[in-house]
Image (tube, rainbow, N blue to C red; front, top):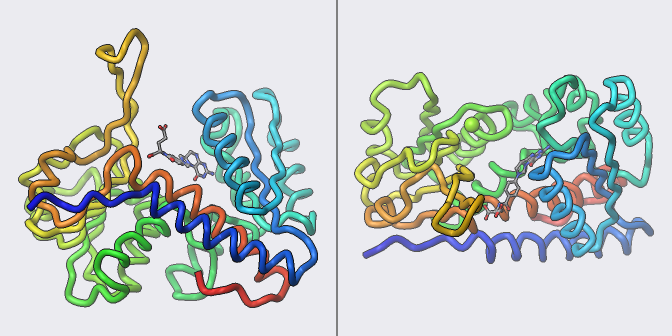
Amino acid sequence: MPAERIDGKAFAADMRAKAAEAARAFEAQAGRRAGLAVVLVGDDPASDVYVRSKVKTTMDAGMESFEHRLPETTGEDELLALVDSLNADDKVDGILVQLPLPRHLDSDRAVQRIDPDKDVDGLTVVNAGRLISGLPGIVPCTPMGCDLMISQQLGGDLSGKLALVIGRSNLFGKPMGQLLLQRNATVIQAHSRTADLPDLTRMADILVVAVGRPEMVKGDWVKPGAVVIDVGINRIPAPERGEGKTRLLGDVAYEEAAKAAAAITPVPGGVGPTTVAGLLLNTVKAAHRRAGLTAPAL
Ligand SMILES: Nc1nc(=O)c2c([nH]1)NC[C@@H]1CN(c3ccc(C(=O)N[C@@H](CCC(=O)O)C(=O)O)cc3)C=[N+]21
Ligand SMILES: [Mg+2]
């Protein structure tokens, strides 16, 4: 039986509907809309597309969007001053600094300047510490979306399951491993220096791949019946679609892997759309917390 194709677009639509419902409840109680500030420095076209989609989705969910576009030549002091002013602005519940920043800016410095209670990307050391300590905090959006998809497939308790995460970034791999651990999975965190990776993937009941190498995980690396989550977004040239055209490939060879897996996320239309939806959930949760209101279970 071929694998179930996990529909990330439908899943994300459901997450957005929940965020919109929570946003209405927040507005009714707080007398203002939850607000998300997005900071974009420079004019990278890919970042521009992401930011536009974040702004639109935010407004569609009944939240306020504050868009701050700064020129490529922005200095570090200016960027930090903007973050400071957003930290101090009561209408702003969430702050996102779009990455990557232009090379002359220190992205870690900018991100760590964000008030942890407004850090809707979950990238500050405070939120990383809260996650590893099992304290309430803000979880990075992409692992949050993957965690929700995995629990929809397998239930909330992953006792006895072996989960393999390939990738160890602060943005994805590390928090993903922590979320799986919290659900009682036995977690292996693999990365570019891991030896004999296919031997490990073949043991994994849950295989989460975030390496950024097109179709690196082959069909015969997948344990029969596994749940496979492909976090890779690799844009590759597609001359067959016309001059200068590109297409997206995941880190997993989808067609092959789908023959073994029980369920698998496609690229595009899998994990990607849940990322922006996760941002809305984080923003509306942050708004409730900041206003001293109980956030609805999301
Ligand atoms: N501070 C910060 N936080 C981020 O969360 C962040 C960021 N910076 N910088 C860039 C990356 C990338 N990212 C994606 C969001 C949605 C899709 C998405 O919806 N992808 C669609 C395809 C979109 C397409 O066709 O290009 C999909 O996979 O189906 C992908 C990638 C968030 N990022
Ligand atoms: Mg990673």
